[in-house]
Length: 98
Image (cartoon, rainbow, N blue to C red; front, side, top):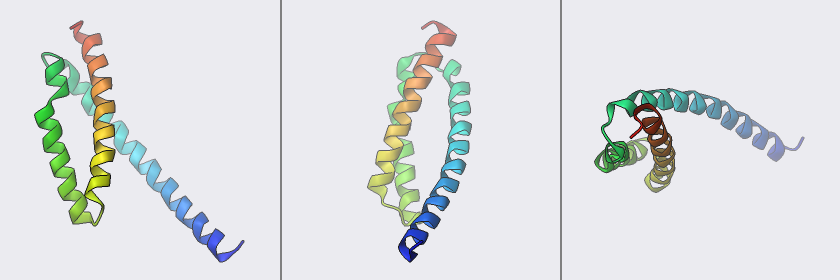
């Protein structure tokens, strides 16, 4: 194996390890979102645009502190948040019929 191929294999192994950690964290986040769903009165409360703005501002600041690209982190979070809103909307409807 060439030095480049070896370095790439090591990087990929570390990414795989991080992915395992991220999936575990996302599962924990999902469980919390599911717990919140029945506590919200309607779809607008599920969408919670003010909360989304708060979360985005917070993760942008965290990205800056961590030396990450805040625009990239915001795009990732907005996609994740939308996926959780979709799931929570379905969960809210299932639990409340509303």
